[in-house]
Amino acid sequence: MLNHKGLIKFVTMLGIGVSLLGVGSVTANASSKPYVGSFPSRKITYHIDSTSKHWKNIWQGAINSWNSLHVVKLRATKKASKADIRLKTKKNVEGHHLIGGELGGPGGRGGLFFANLALNRKLMSDVHDSEKNKEMNALATVGQAIGLAGTNDHTSALSSFASKPSAKDKANLKLAYKGIK
Image (cartoon, rainbow, N blue to C red; front, top):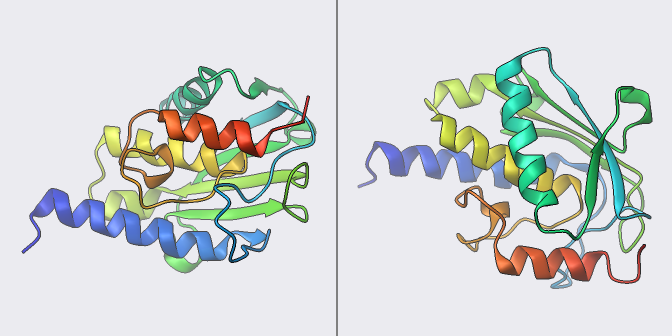
């Protein structure tokens, strides 16, 4: 029988798995590539669409974690319309998924043109998500936004069970951005 924390993690992982089905435009193929695509440049702009200092800090922590790998450079832009990646939270994401939004482009190396992703505040509240879990979910969401594929490896930031990107996440990110300046 699952304890309360185990149930929360199960519901979170179920939500991420189901929400990945709702991430539009980029189609997953049967290959074992650890990424769905990459931006045409390693310099990727982002905008956090939130007025809440709390959520801005959570998103910024996730951005800083990915930047610390020194594979891509995520840079803030003041104009949302100029951003490659837009990150936000929504009161409720359509379909009751943990993560909603879309990745745009044909996928593959250099094939992502934009990412517009949101975390579902209602679902997180319903499962009494801790601050640490919110941070891990934001970390996984940013990883998806830069083109990495979800995984069941609990050491990976993409699993929503890790508090920082793993060495394997870094290797997968390097693979996704190989040959891209």
